Amino acid sequence: MVVALSRLLDALGVPIPQGLPEVFGEPVRDPLGDLVSRYARTHGPFTAHAVAERFGIGQAIAASALTRLAGERRVVEGEFLPHGAGAEWCDSEVLRRIRRRSLAALRNEVEPVPPREFARFLPEWQHVGGRLRGVDGVAAVIEQLEGARIPASAWESFVLPARVADYRPDMLDELTTSGEVLWAGAGSLAGDDGWVSLHLADTAELTLPAPATAPLDPLETELLATLGGGGAYFFRQLVEAVGAADDQPVVDALWRLAWAGLVTNDTFAPLRGLVAGRGAHKTTRATPRARLRGGSLSRRALAASVQEGRAPTARANPPRVAGRWAILPLASSQATTRAHALGETLLERYGVVTRGSVVAEGVLGGFALAYRALSTFEESGRVRRGYFIDGQGGAQFASGAAVDRLRAARQGGAVALAATDPANPFGAALDWPDTGDGGHRPARKAGAFVAIVDGEAVFYLERGGRTTLVFGDDAETLAAAASALSDALARAGSPKLRIETVNGAGVYGSALDAPLRAAGFRETPRGLRFDARR
Image 1 (cartoon, rainbow, N blue to C red):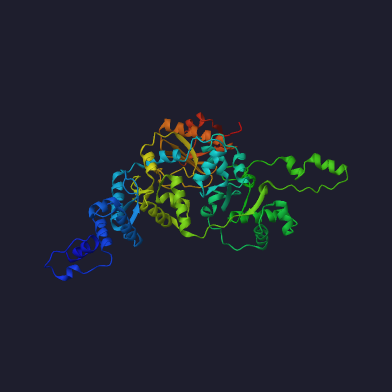
Image 2 (image 1 turned 60 degrees about the horizontal axis):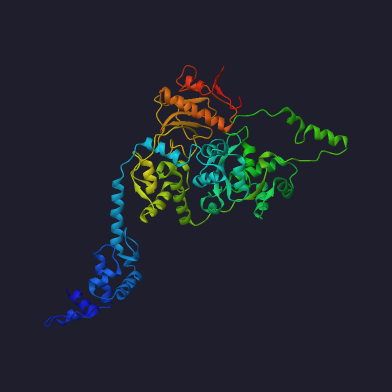
């Protein structure tokens, strides 16, 4: 009572009744500010006009008092009410309490969907089905998959063609040669393959992984010093710069630097040359006999040079080092900015971010780093945290639009994806189905495939296709899955794929026998074979 009377007297001129002790009239430092602060603590968001009416003062005086309180962080200015107009104010603690209760209400509103709904949703969210077209479509895919590690042999065989209906290799090269997109290696794989991520040049420093820190040999150090001087170099220029007498050591050193995430190229051509016929999603092609005899020059050119008395000195660049090489930009050292970029990238990629999806990506810092960034987004109202997918725990984050699409997911079709494709939820956000025999288990391995029909994993093919795991026996579903696999292989131009065993037994007479034959596989002594060149 004493405090209230003194503030009313000094701020508003309200007289104190006679006969009260003098202590009731002791002055305070900011009487009007204290009255406005007390009003704020007992109300939700309000305007300066409401304060002016409450205390019978001018609106300008009320606004001045609120500005002083905002400077002391006792109130916050903003636009809080759904149908409000103009500046609004709210006590800082009241606003935090409103946010906590609002978030709790939003979480309780969402009933989790079965995992199958997410398996329907994710391929559609990532444009699987070839709904995009042209160079702009390729750029849109790269923006969504920015930073995702995918085998080099899968990018142009299965990942991009699955999303861009008219995909051609020159579309990706157009983006890389123009400087809009760059690629980074993230470790080598068997069969002249390796993990590769694509990045938009504008945001690459935020999405590039930290390069490997393994010690470099003298040739690698010299190549890195040459490239570190700036600019881009053709392979032949690099050979001359390091004074190498033989090309092969330079080729090998250059690729060790590329897989370590230190250098890149202005086209995707070297990766095509590296994995052509030998990557995880390819089978070895025979080398033409004429090429073995003629070396880097054709026999006709060799004969002509001999007749003219010239030595055949031309040295063609191997396909695996075509284009111009340059050093990769350094990843940003600003941890907070990188964490926020990671959160935005994961939301763009998955729609609903779960622990399993983040762990499968192998992100440095793991789910703990992503969780901190996404929690910050939730506090600012950009995303929701809740129990969106059944069985995935409460640490799930999504935007309101993604939640709406997840709950409205239509009946899914049949797709065959590389097991490492981010559009494949199995082995990441969702568990693989159980084969029931307790033996071989599927995994997100380079070179493996998974066929999904209406949100259910139907069968899994190991690298090379020789071992297959089938998760059901419905004839119609198996037929749709086999047809999707045939379409994906034909689109990728995979030369050969042979299936020999199904769930540990021979393919002949298995549940996949008839569906594969109907999808274009042909009988051979060792199994059913698909040949895209037939």
